[in-house]
Image (tube, rainbow, N blue to C red):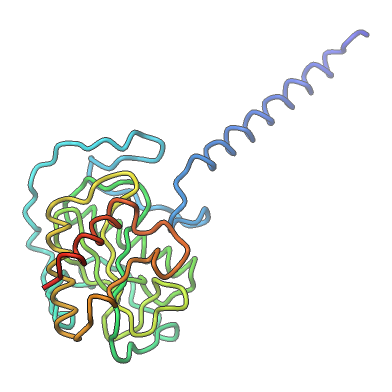
Length: 245
């Protein structure tokens, strides 16, 4: 059968459209699936050492970074942390937040997006504000869901004020302090500084609020999730076994 020029053009356009759909589907399927919904813009850190999606998560040499003088530490309960006001670009939505009540437990998380190799405060602040916006848009939360975040350099950042209930463990947010370690610990190791700070932070919070080690959980121990990643889960098992004091 003779094929007209118009039929050839239509067939070519059909192949191009099908190819675009396939590429889009493959890209979506390969993308890590933690806290970032497709309809929320992901932050672009200013640091140059971030491993982007679909790139090998191989460690890169890092240079120790001195905390920026523009990141003041404030007291948040018993913990000194970099102030929320330093990184958050909007106030919490008060109508979506409840008071904490008596603190009785702690839950440890990882971020779970792309691996984190940057240590500078600017990249970290950008990342945290992106998480805050994601939690507000996707979870309908009033603020970032975690109370404390530990960056790659081992610094503690204030998230949601500890006077208010978090949004980090479905059906277990009441009386629960949320600690997030920045990175993806299915794909990388936490830094030595992060593990040391996590141990110190857990010891401080458990002592202040008289929380037994049996009430220090990871996210996957309360919900069906891979969080905090297999590597950090192993570190948590060791930390609890050896004692947090």
